[in-house]
Image 1 (tube, rainbow, N blue to C red):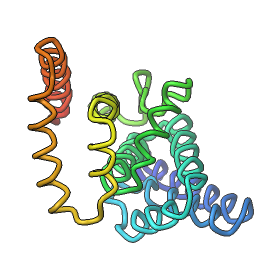
Image 2 (cartoon, helix red, strand yellow):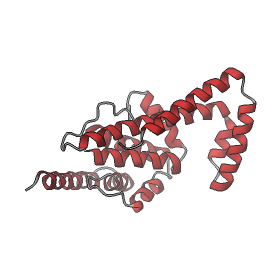
Image 3 (cartoon, rainbow, N blue to C red):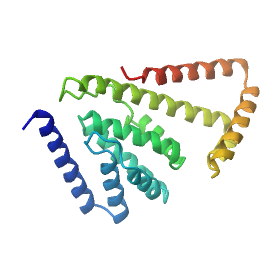
Image 4 (tube, rainbow, N blue to C red):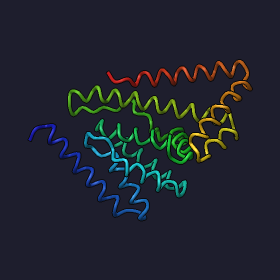
Length: 217
């Protein structure tokens, strides 16, 4: 069997084993959550099925405990895998959850990262299975840095705007949300002192540099 086919076969076995373990452990909802995460981040080089991402968003909307369980599962997935496919899909899932999931995701990932979990610290990630995996590994590391920077900025910005931004974040209407947030940002900058504006601009510039660095080579 060719190395690439062998790698794919091993990946499928790992996914099925992880799914089987998830099904026999914990409550039904937690088992369903673990299974959905594994299926959304499996080894095959294809985009994740949207239904699994929506299932994760739905399950974790019930309580903060499910959000914490979801973050712990994704953290273990990132820490154990040596596959760039699994790592990238997990980061994409985290990105989706930060944008579309419960607002508590930002706080929990931020606090878990600062407590030592370092879910977005993939500085030592390497996939050495194939020669072209080196480039993919570099992209995974860069993408993780961007998400970590984005998360840090969002948390700091939310703290600066306090209750105004928090209220906007919990609104349901997305379009109305964007319009209100834009007005709030303008007001927020007008209320800043000069030193605060320069600090924020430096943070935004660093975030932009992280984003531009994610351009595939």
